[in-house]
Length: 109
Image (cartoon, rainbow, N blue to C red; front, side, top):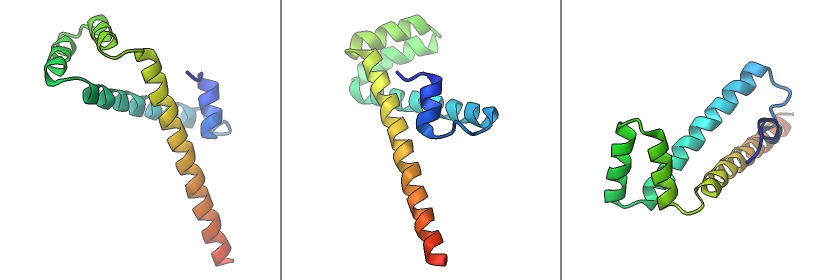
């Protein structure tokens, strides 16, 4: 898993204000959490999702983590992979947008 500084550098926001960096990192964390939950829901059966829902409703964080870890092999690696995929996707999209902007600028000139 990348540390905060590595993520900031990979996203190319190292020159941005700390508030901007914090916002980007929070948005990234939220997106990663959403994707993790989506992927978990794709891997579990309906009965397993019901059991997970009960643990979540009971605010049993350690129970939720233990349950997910028991159902998804190498859960830590699973989370790291999702984070890396999302960061790579953001970088790729940023590069594509930059290329389009450059092309548009050259057409105008």
